[in-house]
Length: 502
Image 1 (cartoon, one colour):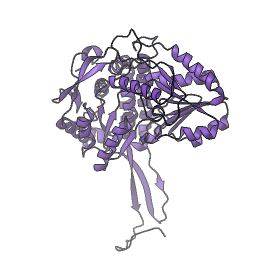
Image 2: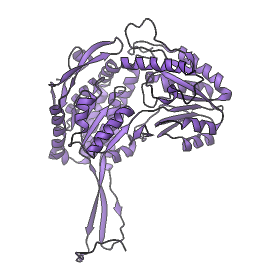
Image 3: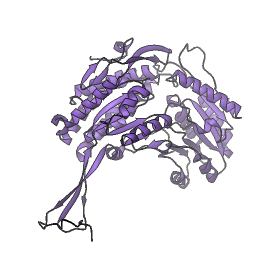
Image 4: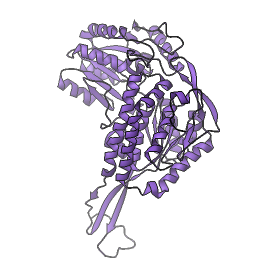
């Protein structure tokens, strides 16, 4: 099956991809919706246990096959460079498929698709630079060194908000390290991963190195995370599902990397460029319709500039164009799921009931048919004990809080179950660095927001999970260290005494 696209997939059931071949699943069928219309556009298979086992078995076989096992690091890098060229040539097709699946702006999905070959080239260059170390142990005539090896089979479970972008954060370092993968995309947005398999095949990766199975978390997902043939699990999604995965992984003693939710503090100090800060706050929560784990959903504004900054934020929100995400002039598309529309409505009512002030939005726009659109929504006079300040919403809803001074800010900002991202707008470098040191977050942006790089490690702690993507940290995440000890003294060892350091 070649040339998969929105046109060829519309009205069909997606294939799955195992051992270098597209095949029809024997499992059930799940409807996948176009968020711009609320109508079914294709179906997604709910893979059987046997199909999940076949995918893991194909990946394990690839790890044992000399074609992949004995391929040099430089050859792996060249394959990745070839894949980068193919992805670059198919950016528009990939972006269109992902927009059809999740309703994000075509401009945004095009940018994220253009980031895929960047990641591939970065890790392709790293493939033959993954080094061990020589250790000066305290024993004469002894050579002690380490080597890094692939883990084996990595299960990559990706979310619906930015599927291939999230997949690539694990896939690129996995390939550089020599692993094989089984990808399980969200049942709400599976088409991108299925299309991507075409490019893996065309690039020349050996069969079994890349496999795609689809389905529900409780069926196909559970079969994957509990499979004894999986050597590591990489999951991006919500904390509740992350805990289920961590439990299933623990039962198999399978290591896991989990990037979960966030309730990221986005801070505007009284010495900031207030216009730039307001623009950054709007970009941090309303870009991608708030459907990003690093969304700056808690905005802290210093009390003496509170009213002025709120006015600027509301003014910018009022100017946002809502509509079909494929239009270049649109800035806010639909939410990816109807359940998210309901969730935003629920949190809106909760905020009103708890005493927050609705400053803008709070409903659904007129004139957009049955699409899953929600207005950008802003609440002021929020306190840190309200639900909209404590729970991840994953939608275009901003909670604005007030702080007096730096001490008050740190107390409020760190009063959260999450610790993923954060941002601060200030002209005072000492203040920025103090914030950086004290904030409980895996990422800190200063005078910018939502500005990731494949070269820079990302990840959180607390309920935001554990493990790292991007940078060399991802190589460490998807490889393991082997220690080698060589005695070249020629002396005989005492059979009953351990040779410890003296």
